[in-house]
Figure 1 (tube, rainbow, N blue to C red):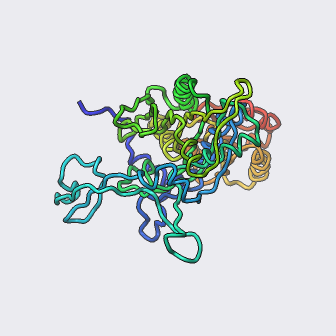
Figure 2: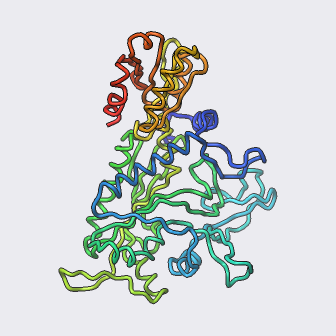
Figure 3: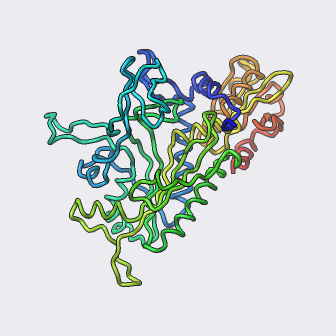
Length: 436
């Protein structure tokens, strides 16, 4: 039987993203740049909210985690020590006819999937972007755009531990851009050459790593449920021995049921003590930990939960998308967790009548410091409700002519479409209570 996929069509998500300003093709007026995407006004807000939510959950609400923001460019020795220069590569095949290139593991035969031509034998292709630092472009000045954020946590282990005086176990978290010269990209923002990661490196005492590995597997699965993603669209998948990196003791993926099928949105790995050992060896700087209680030194083991911002955003959109029958028409609605919604409150005067303008603008000015708002007075109120439903706005505030007489406004709920009428002086507190 074919693998069951999400019922939401990816084309609908791509269309919604373009139409409403979530995601645009990069450099579109020049024909676009393959696998590169720009986040529009709503996409930028949703992306920022996802990163803020992650930071709040893994850093702010925990006493065993601290965050850093490291440089994208790092000393080339970092990538030599980590194994990326010698081993970060994929098998590449090229069509002898149309000259298109593919990752060998994505091809089931020796025939080009595009033109039917013959494919070459696989050869290894390093995925790191190479550039030069300084005015002279020679091998002595080669550096790389980082293919992951994790190495910055490892090389800063001693700096962070000594300045924060954290005792094991503790973690270092980071959100940042990474770059991989992928052979095969596609499926919208799922696989791109420039992407953003949210990574934790959690340092533990050797011998306790298995229990912390189990802890973080469940912790991260529960995180996505808390993000508002339906439990039935999530699963844990254990890597078999052939998939594991040479240094890893174990690895699980958190998979989401995308329209393209079950695919990874986060990996949780037990990396052992490989990384700190390697950087100690290559740098000459001992990256160990002094255990005051045991009066001994040792190199910590590392548990790494690593997730993608872009893939998480795509999963949130797919999972929230719904088409409902409402008033003899189809209502497209994004049931996004209110905390993540790009626009929290929409202010909708019943019409553009100048009598409604002062009160509507005053309410907008009152709410704006507290919520991301949108003021919309174009077209009928029904059309405006539908627009807000489609971008996931949890609440709409409507000002009508009755409001001028009784100083009350209407709050409409996105999910239930129910409406309540309250005094203007209670509006801010009422909305705050709904979000809390």
